[in-house]
Length: 95
Image (cartoon, rainbow, N blue to C red):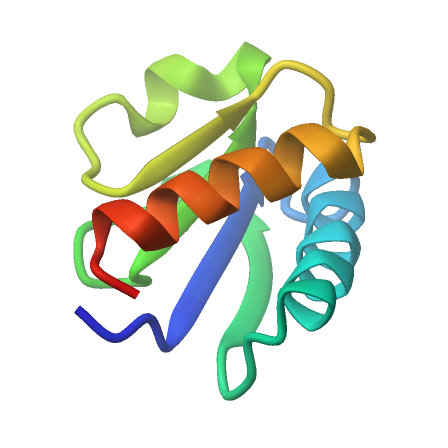
C-alpha cells in the first residue's frame, strides 16, 4: 500500500497534533520519504479513509482504537520513538 497521507490528531486539532505533525515531517525527510501529505486535526476527523496512517499521543489511544494503521506515541516529543514506529508501520504496509 502506498502511503500518501498521514493524519496527526489531538483533542482540539491545534496543540499536540501540530507538534506531532512537525516531528512526522522531520522524520519522513530523514527517512527519505517524499510525496506524503501530513496534516493535523482533531480526533473526531480521524475516520477510516481520512488518511493512510494516524498518529496520536497515548492519552488519545481510545479515540483511534477502531482505525487501521495507527501509531500511538508514549512521548509525543520523542523523534526516536516516532521514527521507530513509522519505520515499523511502513514495513507493515510493504513500503
